[in-house]
Image (cartoon, rainbow, N blue to C red):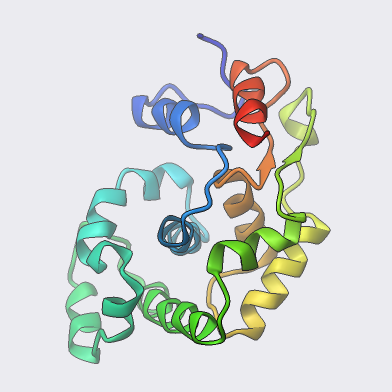
Length: 191
């Protein structure tokens, strides 16, 4: 399979991400939490910038374990400001701890994070049939609703555009172009 969506660059990491992860439905709470945090790190940057640093983010942020992250103290956060393997933006670093605390608060309310997030697409992937990359929106009413709900719960770096990129990444929407072989593959995994 050689064809890819038009936005894919020639970088091997980007191709692997497109082919093996992007658009595939994800229901694991921890993986969804990690991806939401990583998408927030992308704000103002290219996804490739974050993609290249994903292993470093997992190392720096306790494998995205919300319990450990929620307990990060100011000294730990300050040390991360000197970690050149991640994006050293204080607001973004602090947001990951904040998001972990919000994630745990949702759990304490008896909510399953995956179910709570997937409710914005009625529990099943939205299968789009875009022919050209320019047709793909940067946000949707569902992403706006998710953003509003996440912000209400206290999450940070979860604007509508970030939420839509997250929804694409975790397969809540299938935005592979129709002539991309992975459109069909993702559609089958969504059934």
